[in-house]
Image 1 (cartoon, rainbow, N blue to C red):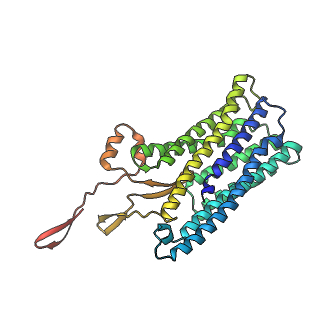
Image 2 (image 1 turned 30 degrees about the vertical axis):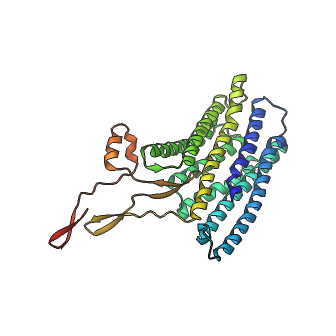
Image 3 (image 1 turned 180 degrees about the vertical axis):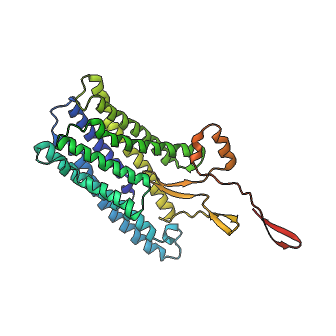
Length: 363
């Protein structure tokens, strides 16, 4: 189980090195780097990830067998031995299947990309085949199954449009499609991600989101990675996707490419460590937060006051609506606080049946 948390550390060096070598070949710092050497660190990362999955399955089976034996002992004091294992197994299987699917998708994409770069026999549309499947699946899942927020569905759509425009530009040479048009959806996608990061981090600072230390660290790493990605994309457009002419610009692009990948992987590692500790503490059980009751004319109504929500790249995040008095103070300094939920002041008072001559009041 612990090995599953280190999968992001396995991806980080491999993909960072590949990004550095690819950017060095693009900028001209290392023109003679072969394509197989450029993608070799990624392939080694996939191989190590596969070994981690095998080891994780063996460790999980051993853990369950040992816990089943210990739970039959009357003198066992470990709380894990008295915990229902089905939620734990579901969380572990979900994490393993998700990371395995992502790794397999990226590996197939890298193989197709290598064939195109080395032999030029595949079109870019064919190279994007695994990514087409993922993008279309994400869109259909959000529209039909309605398991995703509208912003995520829109993000999948932007990614699909970006791949479509890039394929039309390169494969068919449609000159009416400019590079600014191609990278427009990508800029919008990065803008949505950056806006979401600002919303989460600012919400934590004012007390709405209750991020853990690992989640807060991951948010900072994601923010720097997002800024690096936007800056790198802007440089590509300024150079019109040609090799930069100045050595200083080459060095800047060479630093930004692996830095973006490394920070994104380290942020995901911090979140996965936090999720692993939560699994050990609660055994995969979801945290229970009692809901407040509000007395309306129709009777008592449950009010969503605080709880836990799942945010992509952050995992489970606790939240609690702002206090009305605190919200009024914050609005004086920042109007953006109006987008965060807050607890409404209870104005109505219900007078119930009397007890010993004194009315019972509920607010």
